[in-house]
Length: 605
Image 1: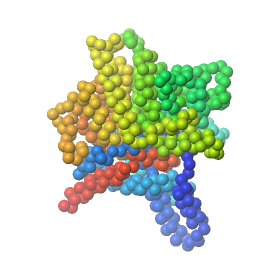
Image 2: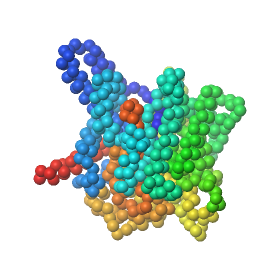
Image 3: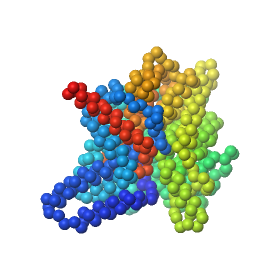
Image 4: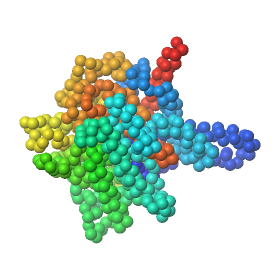
């Protein structure tokens, strides 16, 4: 899903590159009259805006998205959008129709980053392109230019029984972050500005929740903040260096956990050494990583004070050992459970778990990694926060692993992959990923059930309210969502009522599903989420099918100034096409089209 990130090294797409080269040659070599040039420039601007932003939808699918997440065989092909659509302005429906029409062409999605970069480099065309992006993709998928400017959206979501996960979505240019110019001339590096914005977004989220549930309440707070570690230090290569060090020095697990393995408390010990010595880490890396961890603690302290949950995003596998290590250290500190605090003890966080880590079901390690993490949390008395997703980088993980394997055999290729194993870190097929996700989901619901039973007055040893596990299920997959809700019922965590959802919000031909009543002890431990601007039918289905004091579903809401967000969105386009695949963009377009047609016929019929 969208969040802070750093430019990744990816192989260029030949066809897209050729399009850009030919386009520039045509612009520079063809002589035209001023009138023709103006007309031609306008046409190029519109074409560039349309083609170059086609991929922006996919760009929202960072770690919070999934490998082939959609499931059209089990998705609703309802005759209209239902009650939710009745409050959607017509202009928003038209915008959605236009956006998803463009997203229905995979070749344009692939070409969009290079096309957008080309047209953003032409002064007159740039302004037209920016206007087009703001009116279409920005409006569809971005919450606002600032956190404060997104408040109206937060209010609108909460009125419809939905929460939000804030994600500051600025693109961080490594050359700018590591150079002596640009941001440093302004007195503050780019990555430091990102950290400060993280703190501001926590404050905005807290202030919003204070108006909704009350300042003193530690429950019912459904505005959270996402963190992307690669944007919070001068050079993301330092994280790769730390990951390489960890893989080379970490004691082996029994049973063995596939790469990138399971974190251990000793993973960060080198940062505590007076004279650290590693063939992977330079003194500059050590300094940057120490600073990063200090900044993460600063962010976590603010989140703890304000009662705002932090969701640490997962990234490419070559970053994960380092991210896992810092995530574990933060969980052990900030998710610590105090078994018997006094009334005057203010050290117990108002919100638990405070820190959530992301577990990607497309990684072969995930079942063992998740189990080991749960056991570690129980052993060391901290609450485990889990965001379960399928994963956003499957093609790149496979390609990077293949290139690394070729280089080991003597070929002259360079890869970011650091896995020492012969198999790639990800499952080979979609079915394997789906099976892993659903099995992990069942396991997590079981742990939630056990935790609630253990916290009952007869069973608990700690005061009421202590939680040992919290889960955010990030998925656009109807089968997985229904499985999770059914598991809640099977475990006695949700009670069916006599009410049913309407036919239009469920699979066509099934009839309505029973509306579920869910108590506070469950809603404080279980949440589901989708990306803002897409899969609204699924989000509405969850919101309508659950009765609870706290929203059971949240939207991942990116924000940032248009000029800052556009480079990020365009680069992410090719990386994250999974949710667009298998006709999902066509389905979203059809949903909007049906509602537009219904309103038109209502007026003229």
